Image (cartoon, rainbow over all chains, first blue to last red; front, side, top):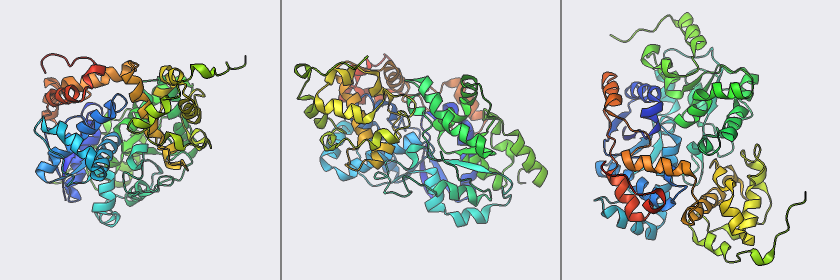
Length: 300
Length: 172
């Protein structure tokens, strides 16, 4: 399984732990990630200004992957929704495709519509498969209560994604979490929006939105929130202290990338999974993991 | 204090057509005001001024200035829950985006978006990965990344987006 690896803007700047852990787990599951230096921003932040410009920016990136004959895999929900939405529109609207290609021609590119765009979690779910992941898990995380956070753009708008997951009751990430051996808890605010989309417009409202889920997780006594989007992690991890301060409360809930906990379960040593970069330190989880399995050493 | 009455002669009856011509705004007129969007909206749950049903109604009535000049058009978090649930397929998240795009064309743009779009024109990405950051990446065994805005600048210029975002900066 070979994919064009679309890193996006936020991951190399603010979520290197997500990038590193992804690069560690990929070869263990037969995924080859091809780095493509010419990729630029997916176009997401420009959509509010001019949606056509975003379409061209997205189509440009898709065209680059098409030239290599590779499907795109992203780690960020914002990137996947922008690229997949552009791809969906252009595959279904010949006139729009002509209009976009007129723009792309000026920079020497052409969108053809020959590839697919998927989030890594969807690749793990559909292309690698739950059974294969279960087979590869050597250190089951069965002692931990984990809470799935999908993030809105991973599965919505459902039309763009061919409804691969249910827009009201998604379960792909829950199944992925359970494949590591950990129970994925059922909680009321599972599909709640993190508020990240308006952090730059109103920090006050955005933090209040993040609070909704953090309050719920505290009641549920979750060991960690499992994220698959760097922007959701900015809200729940990087801003968790701000939410605590604003509302005079305490959470201390680690927010980990799915690839980090999958890495643990696959036997990758914890210090190679960059947990030190998570803002809320998962000390308790790593301690309990060590107590159960001993410190996992690197292979060879 | 009671809300100010709507003065009919101040309404722009053609505004609804302006919205339906904007990509994403095509389905505005299908709304039958059931309020499923407002009941579902996580922003509305916190901030009462963001009320999708009301915004749609205002747009249909032709309250152009009130819609475009208000803060609330910028408050949609694009979670898509209203769009998924809308029984009339108004495609509300895209409609909210269309309203923002119209506001921008009218010269109303949130400064946050100008800043973000300008960074992308400079570096091809939202955050520059400079030499120092690339050195750190190399040390970690990660591939070095380009921060080059040439293509993005050309796209902005050709689509006309640079008019709203401000002239692309000189050089890279």
